[in-house]
Length: 413
Image: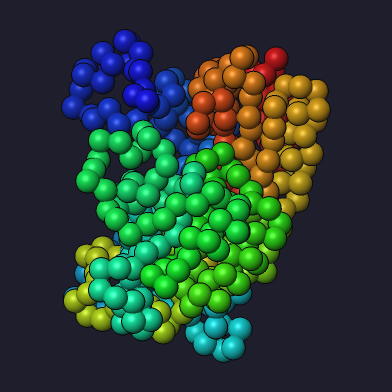
């Protein structure tokens, strides 16, 4: 189905040179601090989107800005043609942070890190790595490798990634589509098992589907997926770009189920809301199939990115952000459950400081709810009709979180 753009928005799209590939809420921001932002007219808003989790540590986090400022006076880019003094420390710090969720690390093997820039680049890197591993190590016949993915997925917007999207808006009009992917229902372990065969080199999944509306799978799903991959000698790739780095009350969402992946993709919050930073972290025998010339990135692992990335890892080492997400998240979900009980919401789901809310479409769309919230000084984002997502910065105050739910209640009424 083709989205209909209101006449006023269609006209605005042609008033300037900016491509109209987004339909933002009518607000123009100029500054921010913590969980609050300010617009061109001086009005303040509580940010409950946090850049789709890129701003887990809030706007202008002082420690992250200090790291960026210090590095700006030293070196910003060398390209991977040369080494720089923060590249290996960043890789070592991130590998250590990811030990609890990388397969083999429990036996003393240090995870390997491949830095990139955007989340989509990290996913593309993981796909390329899985195929190369399948051919070189597993012995899959050339050009036959398959990867199993889930319906409702969101891994980025490159041509390969949208080839296995089930969102018509993301997929239609961008063919011919890249082959080699099999789509199964999210949360259905038996459907996944049936889709795996001798050509399957990997299973690529989000631990929790963010874009789909913060969909949490059944309790036994992830352990079953891990076992299916192990039995088939296929790689388990976990896309932790939105769910990782504190959002769910754990450093990585996989920790909620005690599962380890062979490759993990990271992005968004890894750049601290300062600049794009992403990475693939995983088994060294898997990432090791990439050799000089087989993959690369001019800006991947640049000095400025590594400086900020190191500061992000240090923020997470203490566990304070994760504990905050757990405690405030429990309070948030209890209050949202009350809105379901009173009929203001159809459903609320999520974990940590992350929630997907369904509104009765007969009452309003998700867009209409977000517009009402905007008028009340709260920023949120709709997805898929009458669903909105809440992902406040992990630094949000408890009082501000209550203020947000109060205003959400007012908007729903």
